[in-house]
Image 1 (cartoon, rainbow, N blue to C red):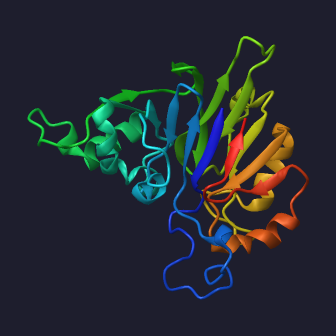
Image 2 (spheres, rainbow, N blue to C red):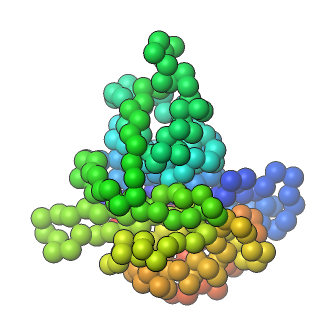
Length: 263
């Protein structure tokens, strides 16, 4: 599997409008962060994880080919505000979108014209599927296990992805979590034998009611014990990309827009 970070920033993106801090004015492209989204691909399957308001800009540099499924983590605008821009991909057929009940209802409210009885010509053709934690499903050759984390008081989905080849005794695994503050003890069963962990880290200080700080994310990674960890969803308060990365434990790093990781 190959993971491409299309965007790694928090809901406001980086730079933040009107801010003149050292991160927002940095000339390092690693300090420019669009809203969180990622592509997960094999030779035969292509999945999009979240589809935020920067989707059009993010997807233009990528090869134009079929998207086999879109997985929504939760019903916030920065994670699904770009859904109307999937229209060009509908030439390959209806696009299947997977969301929990809350996010499914959010999509119905945000894009009512896509689900009307008499749809306006040219609107995205969406097949909307309701999914639930701990109920696995498969798209192409990728197995997907949704599990639950808490975004403050809002239950949202994390995803565990595996692909088993005929040559592998154990499947490689990717866990992708965004916007987490806490996780119940019951969910740790889905976090064993992780090769690559992607998890949110908002900033260095100033506790947030619904997001982990970087120290929380580091501690979480140490408990999971993956081979490597990439932190996503930071604000400009995470510090300069290069400087913050120097302070992280071995095997952990801030992800950056456009980064490609082989699982």
